[in-house]
Image: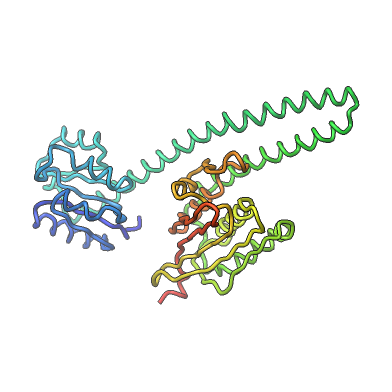
Length: 362
């Protein structure tokens, strides 16, 4: 497991905090270790990325397991390990019930077990988060089946009946019109199924082959792939010198294809796409993908990356709502992230953070 984790240690005993911090550093957990002597003191770290919180059960001003409740609300994705000066099986059971990922008496903590304790608790937390995501996606998928596919099947059945009547009455114009509509419906359903297959295939991508990739080369491929679409929609995709990143060519190509496709679909004029880049630090770069589309209201900037979400244009545009969810999944596979900055009527910016290619790091 990657030990480059941000850890928050909360204990009102300075000696215990320092002892635990030394032990964590000794075991390789040395990226960022935050210290707090109380829950009130820990509030200052809200908004920071915390992978794991190690919290003393007996903190001043708190009753029982209130600290676990606070941490779960403040750092929902963080692993929480409860430590206590007393070993108590009932306390351990209650800690798990309240949302802690592990519990250990202080007397059992030593350099030999701290690493395994952290690794096991963090892995359980990650599995729990993944399970929750899977269940949420399954629920949304069932809703998609119920609404979209049911509607499509009813529509196809109605058109089949109308086609039968048109054939009997030898209404050739109507027959042609119905066949075109049925082909369009079939294409739409096929697209939904293909989107779901591609999205769920990413679940099995754990350690893809990574190499030095030139972002310009990726966009060259995307431009070639959409050459006919660009011509028909009078679209343009412009970029100049872009950095080398550590990535998987196939996955990054899919990411940018999805962004280009969205920019063309969600545009009421001639789509214009511009790609730039900026250096964040010695390890990270940000690719900025800008378009002149219809824009997205601020309240949907995060929601649009959720699978099966088609807000805010679900009544105007077709799709399974998996394009941007796929982009996020690919960014996460690359240990990066993607975000949106947009306003209605003023286009959108999608910002993709990726690792620099090793040869370009200072």
